[in-house]
Image 1: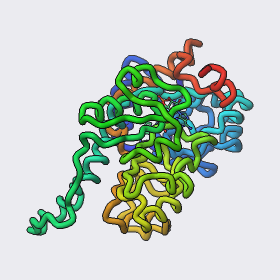
Image 2: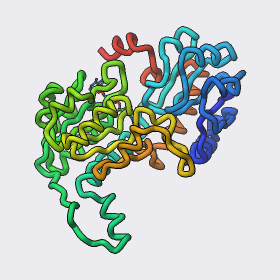
Image 3: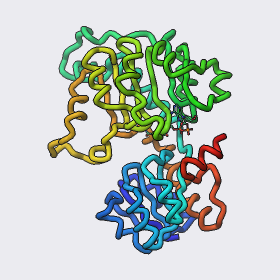
Image 4: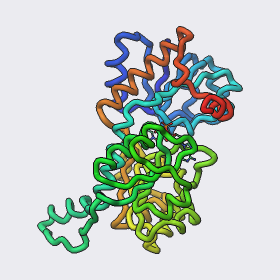
Amino acid sequence: MRVAIFSVKPYDKEYLEKMNEPFQHELTFFEARLSAETVSLASGFEAVCPFVNDQLDAPILKTLAQNGTRLLALRSAGFNHVDLKAAEANGLTVARVPAYSPYAIAEHTVGLMLDLNRNIHRAYNRVREGNFSLDGLMGFDMNGKTVGIVGTGKIGAIVANILKGFGCQLLAYDPYPNSDCIALGVRYTSLETLYKDADIITLHCPLTPDSRHLIDDQAIAQMKDSVMLINTSRGAVVDTSAVIAGLKSGKIGYLGLDVYEEEADLFFEDLSNRVIQDDLFLRLLTFPNVIITGHQAFFTHEAIAHIAHTTLKNIQDFEQGSLATENRVLPEEKLAVSHG
Ligand code: NAI
């Protein structure tokens, strides 16, 4: 199949070309992000292969369909950037990579927790400057701390497993409790109890209308003083302004982000020679107790290889009429039915 691949970085090209040998799709790579300005590049391609910050709103999907596209083969697990209703209305099938390496994201999540707790980011800079003072670097034992996990799907469940090894007490909130987590000793509870009792809160739910700004002023007010908040799910699950207020008041003692609400204008690009215009983002960078990584939690060899292989296989399966149900994304109401 002829495939137009957008937002291509050198590593995407390398892995997709390598993995394409058995599939023999006709791949065309575009560094540009898919947008109103670039959508014409996809003209005549039956499959379009976007990444997380490509624009997939109703007008773009309509143009893609009018120009011959039938499949959106997402190189991601998350699909919040796709207007699924518009995709369906325009006869576009949407495929994703549901689980490429949940370990990659879970391990990065725990990495952020340890880094924040033990001030490794600050120690790194101090030692390089010959400053071996420990003042301000004191951490806490993870052992015995209560961690609240919001969303215990594939990633949240692995986070629970890792933290169990540290001897943490595990609370979780998820509308669909995971039996593996229950067996591990995770206690499902209301969001209110989780906010009240957790020393560390980590977010692993998808971005949906329900979870948008889940962490807002009201949620933060219910949390323990000096709570640690980690978000490696999607930026808009957190209200950035509320979190900044929480950091200023000391309510939030540690913040680890791999995703950011307005990341589409920032992440995955080298902006080191430009003036960043996003004042909220710049404010976040000024706090000593905040670590931000640029949506890199997924970025391991295993995950990139898996994403490339599954994406190409999804395209082949679509061509042959055998796209796996779990790799197909349906509009919300259909998902809800299939979930239940
Ligand atoms: P999953 O679909 O296996 O699990 C998501 C869980 O969240 C499900 O158990 C679901 O019932 C639960 N959930 C849904 N709405 C919720 C809500 N309002 N509150 C609490 N729980 C809710 O997804 P997986 O693979 O574990 O991924 C989770 C999220 O992580 C993805 O949706 C994606 O946004 C993000 N992600 C981030 C990456 C990164 O590089 N930073 C890479 C891959 C995924």
